[in-house]
Length: 503
Image (cartoon, rainbow, N blue to C red; front, side, top):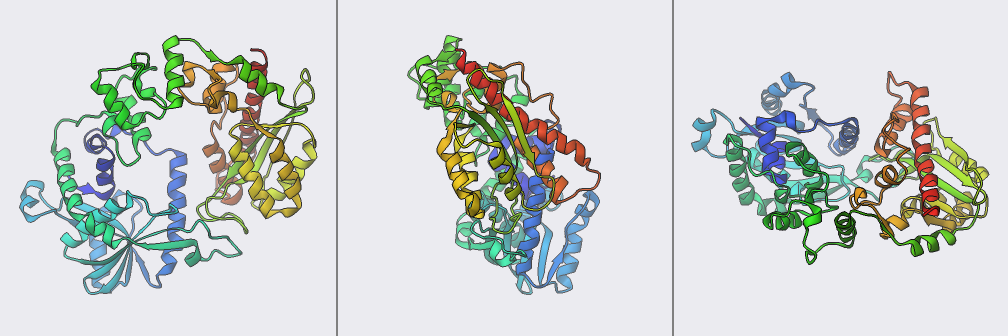
């Protein structure tokens, strides 16, 4: 069995992750449409990063058969004098003594960009769609360097090409301004011996007939949440297990495991917890809701009618979608608005969904200004998000600046009673997100009956339908689904507000 770069990174995240990939891959989740959309966005950025190099020879692959031929096609391109290789694949072994044991080359990697310096010397570039060099990029590049040097090549300079999040689009995309190059040669060289050691460990994991300890305590490199989802499928994790503690941290999980604590209710009173965790643990131990009625009443009494329950849906791209925008800038393309004129009035609904590929903001704000009264509080869930989008839109369209500044001055966060632990239910599992709160306090509402159930899918489908105009897309159905999803977010806020009023 070979160890690829992606598998090595799995090992660094959690040794059991690599073992499952090699021995029981069906237990690992397959990429969903939203994850695939992230891969596609990364590929789009790669195409701009490549424009830094004048003569590129692409190796690449479309299927498993082409993947298998990559090493030979790479050798041929090099022999033919290729100056810059994109997605070339190399094979090597860690040391000659291991060749008989593994029956061939035990390591393989696909390099994003190799730029030839002379016959056998290259500069190595890794293209990342992040806005800065991250710690995990260093072992990634160190693994590639080990493979290249053990395959007989010399690596002179090692760099990361990442996204310049200060780039503002003006007309055609400027590929040089869109990307940044960071020289990490020294960092990678410092990591080489550690990487060789970790490669040896990873190869031993591959050979082992038994999976290493899958405990989340061993998750590294920011992978805990992702590994927890895998772990919960591997083990029979009960709902109120310590593994469902909000933001547990692998050290805290390890400490609880060492104390043989299995359930949240059994966490000792003197065990160090965050404020959110303390509220979750208290509600779970008491098996009843924590309700601070005075604080909730004070919050509700501070609101001025008419009340406007507002939610935006937004789209973003690694490559800026429109002139005047930056990479990863969230662009509102849709809103849902419920208005309650008086305490006993029925809520009235208004909405806007942009259905074209052009910048949606002007039309969206024009409609919102028409729909929203100039008085009364604007209620949102997670205030900093809507307020941030309003500030950005005001910069892009100064004619709406006063309107948007006024909205921000009137905005209140309906999440506050939950994020401040004035209302805690053990079944929130420590979260104050609307997706956690709504099913508990308004069980008659559900996202499960909707075709679109979360924001990432809404964004992906809107971009696919309007900007990319993907073939086979049922536009009318997707637009209908988008309206229903955004409407559910604001309807949920209205019903949660009613619930709090009736406490």
